[in-house]
Image (cartoon, rainbow, N blue to C red; front, side, top):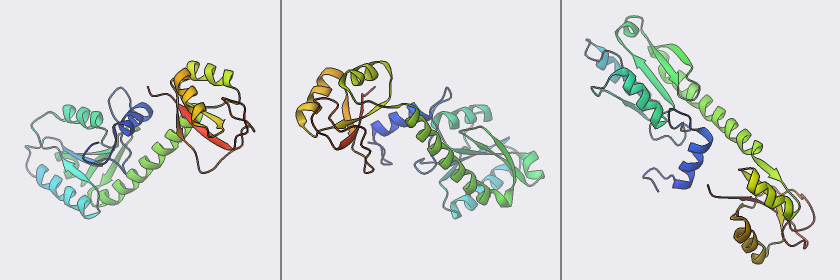
Length: 220
């Protein structure tokens, strides 16, 4: 488990659902750093000072934020921020400061927003909430698109072998059936949802009466 409370299984699920060729995409609510400020031409007069002002204003709004003031190039910093999955970056250079603005870039969609400096905390909070909601919707759609309802054991075996994802099926509650499914299909019960649906009246494994609908899946 990491120092910020995520299990390796959770990290794996996030990579599977949200990752892309550039790296991670972390939902803002669990991201250790929600915003990375990247100074452009940070050696120019006033750039780092303004970046510190923006940092302070974001911290005052309880946003988890850092400045990347390393000697790496801006392009390198952009790539590193994307690889780490930091939800939002702020680009701030001399030309931006002259216009009293900064560029905010979403990690998930790469959309860019030109924002007056005094409005950055409010806009950042808005974008972080939008990112959180959009990523949740995407994850829910991904789960639904990769979840299959089965009512017979033959369908269970075919589906688990041919369609990566989750299976919803009825279970009688007997350990013997769960053990058989695990032994023969390398699949385990993942959860018994609070909101139950009666997909059929019998257990998918043994055919006995069943009232528990269970999500089953393989570990990949």
